[in-house]
Every structure is written in structure tokens, then in C-alpha cells.
Length: 168
Image 1 (cartoon, rainbow, N blue to C red):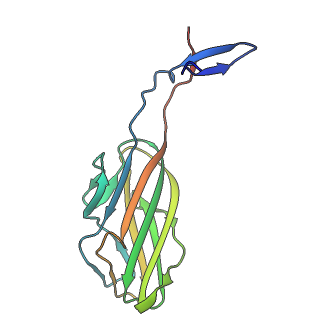
Image 2: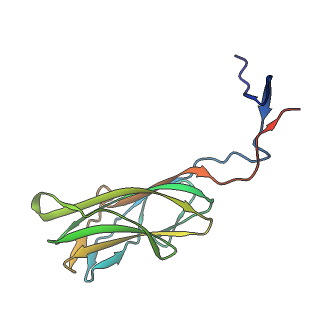
Image 3: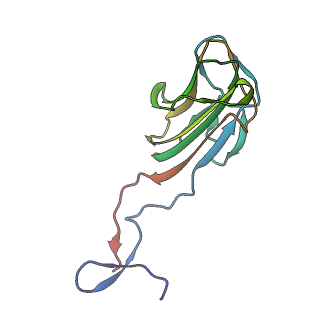
């Protein structure tokens, strides 16, 4: 094996190069959490993240994630709460529109609730991503440790133009 890439276009194998001029980009990934305790007095609360676990592209701006590179992203979230007795679930919002919802949470020992979920979304440069919590009753507390309340994501595929061309 000579370390080159080959493709079969007809009966002959031809060496291929490039991606139509596309430039490989480094991976995009982030993980943020909460250091500040959040007390709710309404059912819906948008979280403002203030703890950066990693964010190589500096996507965290004013408590939300602002996308810099268009592509498909796998987003995951987890929220821990206390003070609830009925329901807890999460929404991921893009530019203020809810695009994905978790299933209802499960109660843990001592009346603490946690829920988590993951989803794949197509995002554009400039999109603002937020995590919104819904809880019942209206008064509850969201955990201020990044171990229990966090939001992470990574680009799984960028959207580029171009095609693989045969080497001349």
C-alpha cells in the first residue's frame, strides 16, 4: 500500500486528490455548564451557561452558544433539579424556536430530578442555541454544578461545496 487514495471510475483505478478545493477544518466541539444556582418562579426557564468545560472555538457568548461554522451538530444536554413533584423536560432552541424536546425526567432519591437527551440538528453560522427547562410546579431549583447541568455538542459533518476530482 502506497498511502494514496484511489477510486474506480471505469475499469481502471485512478488516484484521486482533494475535495474540489474544500479545506479541511478542525473539529468543532463545546461543553458548558452552570456555576450559578438558578431558582425558578415560572414553568419555563432559559439557562444562561457560565462554566466552560471546553470551547476551542469560543462559541459561548452571553450564556448561549453561537455557531460559527455551518454543519450538522450532535447536541447533548443534562439538567438536575430539586423542588419538583410533577414534570421536568428540556427544549433545545435555535434562534428562539424550539427544535427538540427531551422525554419527561425521572425522579431520583431525595426528590431530585434529572433528565438528559441528545439530538442531531443542522445549524447555520450565526445560529444561537439555548437550553430551556420546563418544570412543574412553577417553583424549583436548577443544580449549579456542571456535573448535573451541562450542554455539549460537536459538529459531525460540515456543509461544503466541491467534489472529489481525479488527479491529472
